[in-house]
Image 1 (cartoon, each protein chain N blue to C red):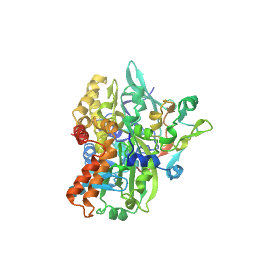
Image 2: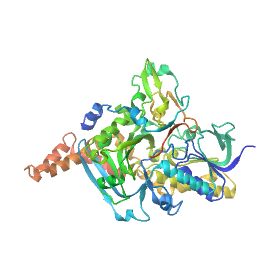
Image 3: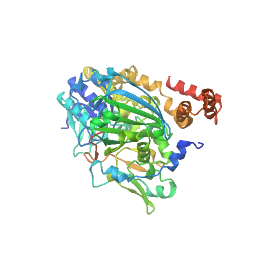
Image 4: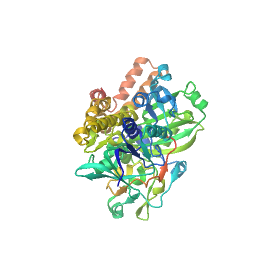
Length: 107
Length: 431
């Protein structure tokens, strides 16, 4: 796609907020173990240069640290995007146990 | 002895609750299983609930249901980076009974709707995840939940388990959705006093506005953004095809923050306090992505069946109608005592004869077209801004020369033929 006003702006978009400030607004009932799991960490290391999940996840659950993906499941908004958009289908995605996870009041 | 019901509904969203309400009203024993703390705890919607389809279930529900504002005005913005072209409709007939649609908070509305189901005789079980459907000789006979000895049995299971529908996938009713079959939306609730909202949006007390934004809100990605008024909150959100968000390597919340800073948006939300933040997938596969809807002892409704009309931001109404039609099919199946796919297929037939499938069919190629041809969102939408800017900026240039200039700029990168072809294809996909 050739460049245009939108694509240029999109590329230059900077993160100006701390996502934790948004997540702190919500009500959470955190579980003790993760409902999200990287199936094979070697796939992230060896086959996935883009680490897309660290970018598109709207809660920044996934971060690349010390050659592996860390999973901050406590802040997961349970949208399911990572399961569908992981380029290697390398994320095992379940719902948190009943009653756990984010509990929306409004929306 | 395991407990057996006439029907199990998985998921207390509006599709599942519509099905549960109708079946309970028809005298069936119904249990609804919900994974949240309460119905609505996991449900996210931009916020528009349509009166007509809800009223088919509960007449004059607006007299008692927790609603935010009746929508009296729908605005549409074609957004460029620093400007918008705006149009819309405001009508006083939407400000009185029976109304057209309402903004609602699903966290509150779904709890009320669930109470109505309970009053009709249904049982709601919260804080419980359904892990899988129980199969016996090729038919669904119940569900297994995450609770100890959590098996429940029924003649029919209604899958209203939302856009992710892990249960539908387990049954092989659909393959995993592709990133271009769902939109990823993020949204925030911003708190403001109701009079401030009414002043800023030019509203009579209690009335509401919706603004749908095309183009600049998603910075050219195929999707929309929106601003809806609630009583004391403004919902603001951005959604785009997951495939496009991934490809653009953009953080969804950066798009939201960018929208909030747009000069046309900023004044509406000045000094508003963020109070809740959401992310949710929206089914966008349309007609071509509708999964298998009926099997032996099982039906699929709502988002789980991809029943969303993205072009018109309609979803809750399709969900409720599908839930109601599924319930009617189950009630007929109950009468003849047969719950196989053939007996339940009345649901699919009724759905095909309703506006639900008709509307999805009408727009079946649109999402695909806009994703494959980036000019619509990246060139033609901004071009509306450029054209009006030129025509309305008075600088001594004659109107004839202005028109020439507009055409030159529009055709700078493409021929008149290709622009005409694009417009024709858009018309064909939308007509």
